[in-house]
Length: 422
Image (cartoon, rainbow, N blue to C red; front, side, top):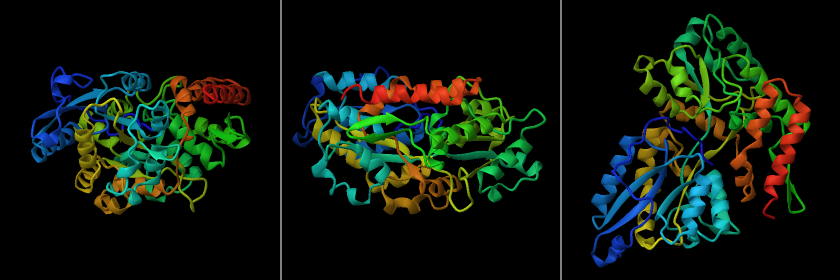
């Protein structure tokens, strides 16, 4: 699943006037010694400009017969664009997709089955949160690219001024107490937009609830269960300790820009988001820290959504061999280690965790990862995210709506969306 604003830094499209799709004039086999050009769709803010440039240069040096054209795609509306591309005769050769979107695209028959490549790619060590959503009906279509989960990014100077030791915050109650203390004198204790539904999901899971459950081959939305209601009640309490908009998500406005203004003590984001804050306000360099989202008790950290991306190859690609070479290189150990260090991501293999052992953001993320969850692994979930009644539900509650009634309405919308294609 996408984590929108993963790294929070601008990604530069490397080649002006890039085509979204493959060009038949480029179609030639790398093994023939002739040059071939592959078209790659990567997502906005997944990696930094520097990393993207370094990888493409390194790849083209190692594979002189393969040239790479990258087009950056926006997360908003990506499902429709990928679906259209897969149905065309002129699809890109490699597509980055949110890990839990793979089932949706595989269902159409538009993705190349890569099951026979799993062993060669080191699949036995892949993170389950990336590998399992990449499987549809027993076949591996998505190759794990990177993973990340949310942590609390905080202002170390504001915490120190308030006499708060961030390392001592282990429970939700302690977190609320500290945030109330920080929410004073023009400073927001936390900037939490009203529609940060990934954060809400964690609180729901903490309570033993879920977004939807399956029974008898049918899915049912479950935001109206007592457990899920308790998760929303905690979200409402936390969100009130700041000035986050009740009708927008983390991207509207970009929460990095809000924190960069200097009046926000905390945000919930992936660790790489700190780079975006510093990019907007270099004066905050050295003043940002990280801690895991607290749980209900000190014994267990807060539950988090395990997000990330997989790489897929369309069946319509005329350059599948070159595309696979690209995927193999980018998901291989050498570049995975570099990616993890550069972006504070979790590498795609458990055996590579040591690459970020000295990174405080990644260390905090690893603690939360022990309580990682995913959205339902079914094509029907894409229909939920397309209209996202969860966001509407959150805004309705935060603006005074009856929580039980609004939860029932949202659950019904989730149920309808998930079963619409069954």
